[in-house]
Image (tube, rainbow, N blue to C red):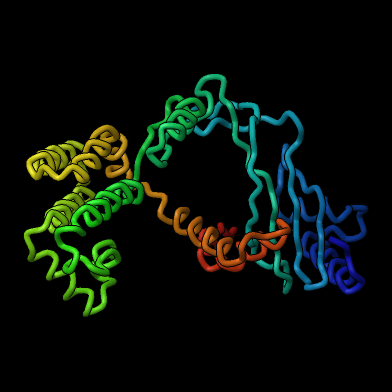
Length: 314
């Protein structure tokens, strides 16, 4: 980012203000050292560069010394860095100038505890599970509400398709009526749903059994949630509806990860929703010739969602 004349003057003003506040006077201290003193940055971290752009925004870029060690988050043992992720924080203004700090966040490999990832929330795909177990041997693999609901909704829609021959008139244009959340239905859709649920069709049974399953997410104890699932699974088997039995069997195979997700209350809803928005944008644009254009549209559609998750230093 090139420094413009106006930016240089603004930077000079900031540096002079800092010298006055820190009572440095005429000592030969460069701007990086000055900001390190103001921000109380200690070794092994240091300021790599400082930029002041034409919009009068101050950017401070930090690094840590090569071969640095940081405390293990579990036992506190100084440990080598194996990876880092770049982060940006909105800092309090330096005087009237908006300020951002950019820094790599190190992840360490402790000689005692290794790489510590406690929980991984994910899709039920075998390849995903294999990759996660290979990378994070001691982590709990969990399957959240979003992915379980996806399996059940597929069973619901598959049942609808199989019932079209016998209940075609009743189920005409019913796909989104049965797949939507009840609170999002319009009045006409609610009437349609009530007609379906009052019928003796398999789709009505499946809808009601899936609604019963949703109660499992209200439990806070793993044992009670497990007992509830066992009873629900029995009801599904008694129904004899193949599409739902298949979904219930899939859930049963992953039940330990689902119960762990219920207790820990972890979910991927935010990331999945963001991913769907990005895919929709790509479809509408029929692809992007340049990566820069794709990134620009991602920032545009995701800005409201992402901004609330950015950390701020106070």
